[in-house]
Length: 151
Image (cartoon, rainbow, N blue to C red; front, top):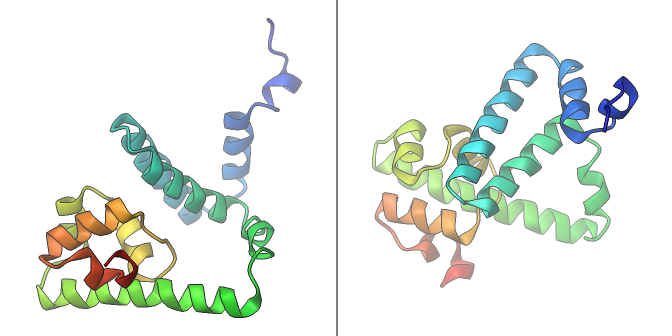
């Protein structure tokens, strides 16, 4: 099969690169970091976390995309979910600061990127139960202290 320029432009990786070129330089770097993190997670067979990172990448590249999902929740449900994510992140941040460790140290201990940890602490990324368990272990607390839903 011969790939013409037109066919090449329809392939997802090519379209992704074209969309990346349209972003400001700092967003391009953030996307590059996310892509590297996603590849590392895939190599380690951590597909659930890789999927979460892919969602972050999509949010940067296509800010209108989350709107496609939001219609499933009412405004009050979205507000409640956002508050839950922020509280979860605040509990992690508070415990990390009590232990006087940096995000970079905690990220290294848990095997997640500092960027992902930052987004979790700010309530922008909801971690999987597996990630919450790793963070809790590193912080010396039970997963339920981070996410009461895991009790």
